[in-house]
Amino acid sequence: MTIEPITTLKQTLRGGVAPAMATPLVPGTHTVNTAVVPQLMDFLLGHGVKGLFVGGTTGEGTQLDDDQRRALHEAAVAAAAGRAPVLLHVGAQRTETAVALARHAATLRPAALVAMTPTFYSMSDDALARYFHAVADAAPDIPLFLYDIPQFAVNGIGPALLARLAAEMPALAGLKTSRVDIQIVRQLIDALPADRILLAGNESAALASLALGADGLISGLSTAIPEPFVALTRAAAAGQLDEARGWQRCINRLLAVLGGTRIGGIKAILNQRGIPVGPPVPTLDANDAPLWPRAAEILESSG
Image (cartoon, rainbow, N blue to C red; front, side):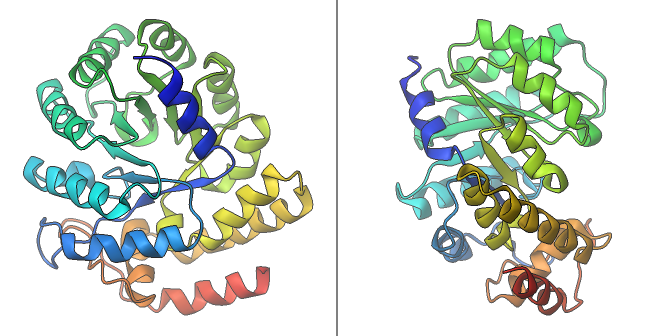
C-alpha cells in the first residue's frame, strides 16, 4: 500500500475530533439496533466532527458477538455514505477473530481499521507484533491504526514497539492512544514518523495532547456532546489558546457529570437528546438520571 491514503486521512482528521461512536442496542440484549445508526451519524456529522470511530471501547464492540460487530460495521459505513472517514475497530482476544473481522471490514472499504491489543494476559512486544501483522496482512490495502489503552487492556503499545511497527508495516496509519500519562503520549508522538497519524483519547488532557503534536482526538464523550470537542479542536488549530483552554475546562466539568457510569451516562445523554441508542449491554450499569439538563447548563455557560 502507498502512503497516499494515509496522507489524505491525516489531512482530513487533523485539527478535529472523531467521536468514539456509541452503539445503539435493542434494550436488554447484545443486538445492534442498526435502524438508529443513521440518526446518530447525522447528529454527529451535523455538529462538525471530522470522522467516526466505530465499535471501540465506548462502542462496546468487544462485548458484541462477531455477527453483531459485522452488522454494526456495515450500518456505519452505509450511514456515513462517504461524508466522513469511518474507522472500524476489529481488535479481538483471538488473532483469528480479529483477522476475520478485518477481512470482512475491508470489503466495506472504510477509511481505516483499528485494532486494540488483546486483553487480560500480558504479552511481549514480539507477541503483539505478530498479532498486529496478522491483522494488517488480512486487509493490506486498508490503513490500520493501533489502539493503545493499557489501563483497560493490560497490554500497551510503547514507543519502541510503535517505532518498530511503523518501520515494518506499510499500511500502518498510526496510533490511537488513550494513555492518561501525558509524558508517555509525548514519547509516542516522538516515536511515530511524521507522515503517520496520532489520535489522542485522554479527554481531560485533550488540549495538552494537541499542543504536543497529536493530529486530532478520538473521544467517547463527544459521541453524546460533540460541541465542546469540535470547538476545542478548532480553537487549538487556529492558535486561539485562551478559547481552547476554556473549552478544555468545559470538557472537564462535563466529564464529572457522568459520575461512575461512563458508558451508561453517555448513552443516557444521547437518549435524552433524542437519539434512542438504548442502554448499555446488560452487564454494564445503565443511568436514568437527568444528565443532559446538567450538561446543557455547563455547555451554555461555556459558550
